[in-house]
Length: 73
Image (cartoon, rainbow, N blue to C red; front, side, top):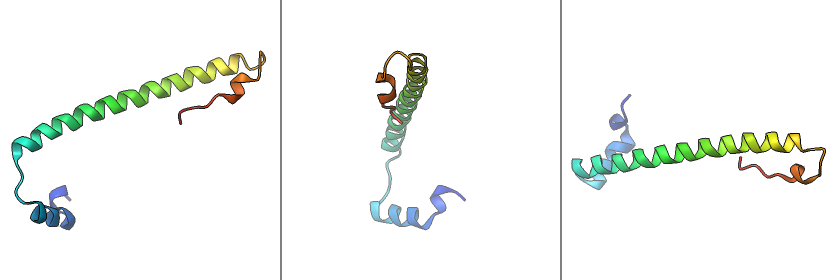
């Protein structure tokens, strides 16, 4: 089933009117760049968390501070 075949999408197209293909292509490019940046940022946070947990595990006997480490996830 295609996205355009959904009833909700058809009703929205009737309400919003005709679409401008040029504006749609521009916004698709912008959304693609935003998605890539968001995905890259989440991947970097994941690697940071992985490295930080290893450091906290190695230094767990030195002090109680690593047990208070807050992860972004």
